[in-house]
Length: 173
Image 1 (cartoon, rainbow, N blue to C red):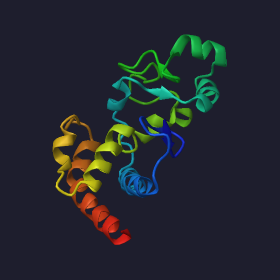
Image 2: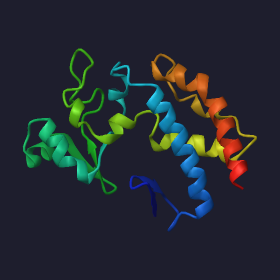
Image 3: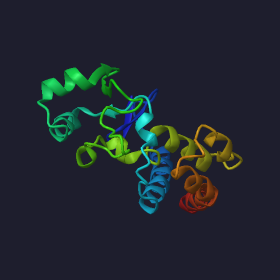
Image 4: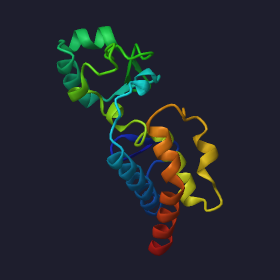
């Protein structure tokens, strides 16, 4: 299995071919731009997602943010599946306060900061749209909840951003 940028698992690949990595970089940059231009509205809606992961190197930091010893944090809040840690409680996350603010905001797992712009599910769809010129991403975004503050931002900007990335891709060829 190949790993892109140290956290995105690409199953079925032993290595990432250079041309694929170039296209992944375009998708990554597009998603990064969306994230940077659309700060979190702190609505708390993403705190209800299943499969909130905590990478091995984050466990100690997140445990400290929760004010817990590592062992107690792991036993109370995490379980292990497919070589990754997942929060046991995610509907809502155990660290979501009643005012929809995160109790561990400063030390939250990276996936919480990345959601929804930099997670594999969205980036994979952006990658496909960039690499397949006839592919319209809008159908791929049906899973997005239109009541979320970030969804209208994504849906209003994504086509133009993908067109721009396709032009960059073509110029690089």
